[in-house]
Amino acid sequence: MKKQLKEFGELLETKYKGYDINGHRGVAEGRYDGFACTPEREPVSGVNPNLKDLALPFKEFCKKNNVELVQDVWIGPFTAFGYGYFDEIPAGYVIKYLDFQTTMNFVKVNLWTWENGTQYIWECLNNKLKNPARLNSHIEKVERKDGKVYVTVNGKVEEYDKIIVTAPLYIPNKRADGQVGMVDYFDTRDDEMALFKKIDYERYDVQAVLTKPEDHPEISYYVFDNMIPERLGHLMVYYRRWKETVDQVITTYALRKHRNSNEIPYEKVRQQVQDDLKTMGNPASEVINEWSVYYFPHVFSADYADGWYDKVEAMQGKYDTYYAGEIMAFGDMDETAEYSRELVERFF
Ligand SMILES: Cc1cc2nc3c(=O)[nH]c(=O)nc-3n(C[C@H](O)[C@H](O)[C@H](O)COP(=O)(O)OP(=O)(O)OC[C@H]3O[C@@H](n4cnc5c(N)ncnc54)[C@H](O)[C@@H]3O)c2cc1C
Image (tube, rainbow, N blue to C red; front, side, top):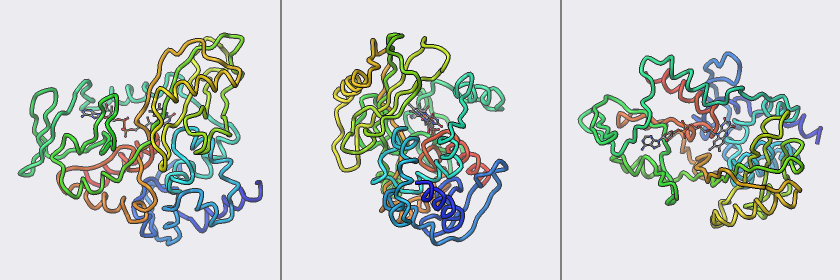
């Protein structure tokens, strides 16, 4: 394993130079173009035909490079954190989020959390904005015509020059929470629909549970045996947020769908996870919150290789509309915020 890890680190630095640039622009054509993964986050671009391999599912990517063992290191912070299985998710998503340095930080548990939670960061940011976010505003309809964008929000029509969409672009199934994609309330054009309907997402289920003090886990833990498609719907990670106290909720996470399987019903997974907790010796005395989330929108390998990202990038601004949000980089806050910052620098 040590040998393969070293080799993988070297491959990423050399053969796959540019792999860790934010976003996927140019990758399918063997280019990189975006903000560097450095503290300075400077814009960089270049040509590297090897980057086309990033369209392969991560499992195949590792096999191609004779470093299959490294999957055992990457799998914890990837699959357990709800980002899907290595036989279905393109390597581009895996190694842009878990670049070599980030993964080593997971391994060394060199991690930090925000004292007041991440919501607090956005509240502080919002307080500094000249035009702060308008909360509780439901956009019911968007029409783009005559060089203007007409947005129906909370029952009233407002006129704008441009719109940047950071809400989900497409949701392939009817969700119990009623969430829909942009294509359902915009005057969606054929090219938008053709591209966005390629998007899928993860059915990631979260439960916040209480455990009796005597059953409390000593520390957060992964259940590696459950991170394979055959164990879909089982508990993969068990999260204890604070070390010093048992007076807290424990959160559990499970996936409900693999690309090649039907979605497992929510109720079944909910029960399965609670049964797993009993098996692990940390039974839930009560479930106090639960959430079946819309998580990690992505495209699959064939569309990634076919230049899905370049096609969407070519549409930026075409209908006075810009597309941002997690689909354009990766389903976490860091990559998403970074992509948005770059989008604004490029077009505004
Ligand atoms: C349970 C869970 C745990 C996570 N943990 C982490 C983590 O530890 N670290 C990390 O970095 N990331 C984490 N993420 C991922 C992270 O939250 C997302 O990647 C990020 O929030 C995506 O940002 P976004 O702006 O694209 O979308 P969102 O943050 O989802 O914002 C989209 C917004 O659009 C709004 N919206 C949708 N439709 C409409 C409409 N018609 N009108 C008005 N508003 C609308 C939605 O209400 C929502 O507020 C987690 C996500 C979940 C669900």
